[in-house]
Image (cartoon, rainbow, N blue to C red; front, side, top):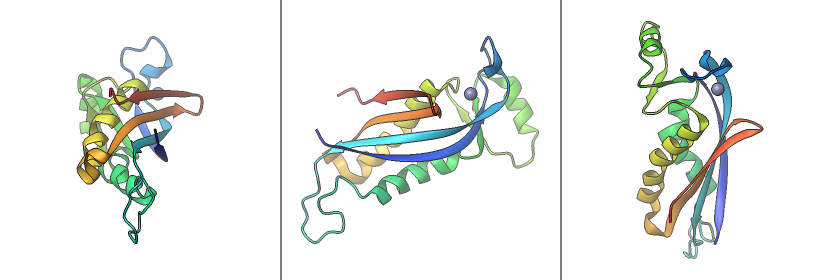
Length: 149
Ligand SMILES: [Zn+2]
């Protein structure tokens, strides 16, 4: 099995509304997102990406466009956290991203996978798949979400 991994970083705020301790407070993280693609090297003599699974600059461009630029310097708020949504809606031009689950690193890794997997599939078809998302919330804490097949 051959994989490649691209790492991107972004800053975002969140809170875990039901947490027993400090994570219920508004705070932020420097997240690091590692995108692992699995496939076969492109066999296309003369092509710019010949011999690659996918050009790293293309891996980056897709992730930036569909996820990182949207989440960077945003506040990620759970759609069930109505108090927080009310507060954020009162801030003019605030960058808020509503997510369908509580924004733990585990849930964010799953959401990132669900957003990105079809984007990579669209681009290169069945020859390439998003094998894993690893999302670091801190340098020593992360979650992995791996494709089921
Ligand atoms: Zn946190």
